[in-house]
Image 1 (spheres, rainbow, N blue to C red):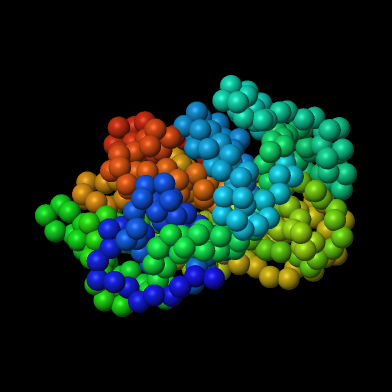
Image 2: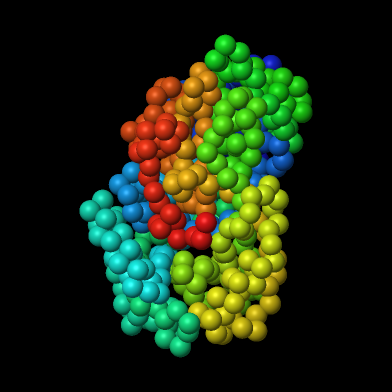
Length: 393
């Protein structure tokens, strides 16, 4: 599907991380900015990190203008991505519900719906009766946290996570991008305030521009270049059930109960949890998170009580103090970071890659990602999306 070349000694741009964001960045650098001598360096296999370790939810109903513009830009790219890449990414716009279980939830979600509408994002408030029509199997009343309503974004949905990585990889490869797998970046080498290249398990590779898109390990690589990023890395778990006939045709998220669920095209229930309560670089996570999540799922959907779970996995998410990403150059000339997505990285894949490629090619932020500079943690211009993230951090 793509070449497996040995690394050259020099590249115009090196992208560290072979997930959707990294491969997409290389694709847009080649396609939209005319750069040809590009490498994507991945320590394992393509999509083996967070791209293949998530619950595939795509939406743009975030609260603040800055976030709304970024995620809506991404959603618009999702809507045409199969055609763009000539590869079926199985994007399914089945809608997303964000449930409200108490008065605080109601006020916060209604506020977010209004903010979404002001930004031209399809978002509406639905009452319990409408929710039951959308999801007949949901228990909305006889539960510890009754369902009082929800926001609903019809254009939201899910996609096949592996397909996104494969599609970007194939098209980037056709444009001449070297995709180098099983090559771990050990250190980012700098001198006199400029990036020199990367030390890897296959030797030193020179470049004047390095973009780091390494999700949970970004802070470790940044530290090797003498940069301290405001990130915490934690495990975020998910699991899938045995396949069953279609019973739920939308995505349902609940922050108060904390569990979210959708049904894959194979019939598996794809279930997401909150982050573990401690910092970690493991891809497993604690069993208590699974137990709490299953308990919440069974309370909201009693018919799931006797189902068997097939498998469980974890991704390493990197979380910033304001639950918004960093898409930014830094004080080291030629070094750029795309990180801090927390639990919302997959949905932003094409939009993130598109604006990050612009930032690297022009050495200047795109207007969409300008608010997500690392400098905001000094200036105090934070983009606080802890509520809209809909995940217990």
